[in-house]
Image (cartoon, rainbow, N blue to C red; front, side, top):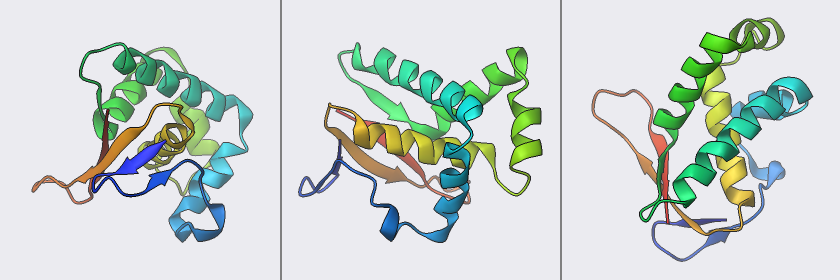
Length: 128
């Protein structure tokens, strides 16, 4: 589950009826069982590693980038992703998948968007 940084609301379900249109890339990706299962299992593994630490902190950009590098070394993920989803960005899609996984998690994670000066887009951080 995700709790906003203000501590008021808790999100425990992805409301697909209220998602911005760019989420369509993730919704299409989710239907590809091979690739989405690969990334989901890897993301869950990273979340579980963080849960075992005293101060759990997940920076979506760091986690997704690290996994994409690992996939490049030992899997044909990049080629398959480009073939199946030519108009999508794998890092962005995995970031949305991470968000979806965090919502479904039994632990309450505090959610915060982080915008670094040199970065064009903000990225999500989670901590408990």
